[in-house]
Image (tube, rainbow, N blue to C red; front, top):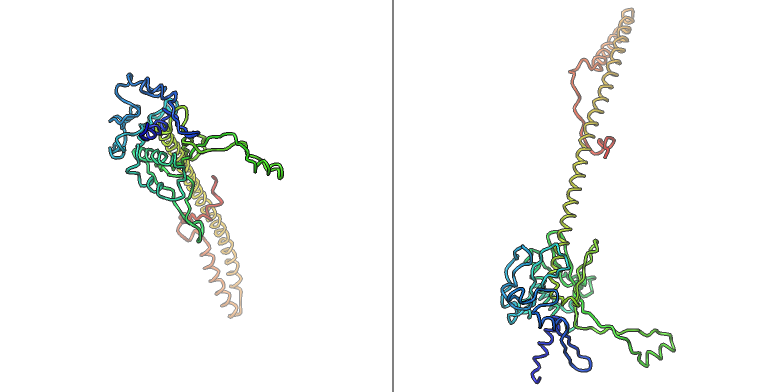
Length: 385
């Protein structure tokens, strides 16, 4: 064909795994098994055929793009026509073997990146952050665009990876190697794209053979050549859930975005459940702490009253002893003949009488003492929890 536009068509079919394009030994393209199946049935293997589903096509730009899988209604606005490039996009249809318990929305990947999400535009325009090869770079951005749009339709927030200076003299660097971050109500999911590579047997060069003989330097067994396939990864969680999706025999990555979105939903639900359990545990610990403080406060008051009661009884006994002694002092003072000694004795007896009355708790109103201040130091001996 003299018109080179066929290469664009072949590349689009290659991205959908309907054809295989190779540039080794000259440009070639051939149909895949999925492509032959699609020609015959109008659907990928494992999906309802075109006759079974009417006029809907998994690749066609139809109003059904915004419909949902299962009984849930689509959230958020439908994608604008200008976001679909020439009116064509790729739907990420839900697979039957991935996260079957969650209803998933069809995720649209635009065929052209005309009106990118601000986060995707920043990723595209920031040098040194999205270093994928030219073969896949635009496609990877479009996939992230579709995922970001679908995530926001679910009520999530999409933000870019922050950049910061590691030292006063260094160039700013991203906080992580991830490309975008999707934040749900209860968790944060980091997303990163990778370009796959082909492994082929390495043909040793004359220099490598010579260095191996002279210095014992090992010769690599394989060469890894970047290809046109992509892999998307989410940050690996503690629960070992699935975190990676790639182009493969089950279809291109575009068709797996619904499963990725469902996984993000699963993570959000699990994080919410963990938060609720943590909040409940915190509330229970606080309830137990307050109950322990209440018990300790009661024990502190009881102990204080007991101490005061013992002190009053001791003061009462001491006052009785003093009165007996004062009576003996008075009897002795009556027998004194020296006027000065008699005056001094009477003064001492008067002071002792006042002292005995002050010590006697029965001379004062009978009531329980005021409760002590329940400070942390005062409660410490009574806390048991």
